[in-house]
Amino acid sequence: MSKKIKIVFLSLAVLVILVTSYAIIKVVLPDSNISLYGNRLDQAKKYPISDTKLTATDNKIKESKFINSTKTSVNGAIIEIIIDVKKDTNLLSIEQMLDKVLELYSDDEKKTYDFQVFVTCKEDTSEDSAYPIIGAKHKTSLSFKWTNNS
Image (cartoon, one colour):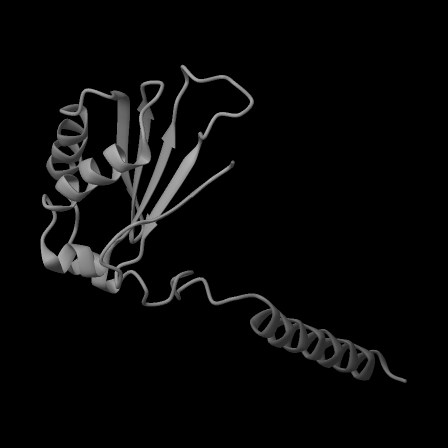
């Protein structure tokens, strides 16, 4: 074989390998231009939760006598509330307080965002402690559903 034919053959082989590699990469790896969450967060963009609203949420929670600390944040379309309560706080008190907190949010916001509440009690270190308690309210639900580790 002549040297020119070898170069052409080698060039075609490299081109075929590159095209095949590109095709495999496009099939195996996701498109980086497409959002990881698809369009699930589009509705949340229509009703953004401001830092002022998060601060108002924390302040409303702190009005209750049984609260040690609270932290509210937004993660995608989930409003996460972390609350540390005083020892011997019952779930009914927490539920009533959160009903008042939900009043801070518009109907559109409540239909857009899920709420997650993590209740801890750093004062209660006993093995039979009811804490942590986790509550969740789906955007289509009217109230929180609760679970605990006991």
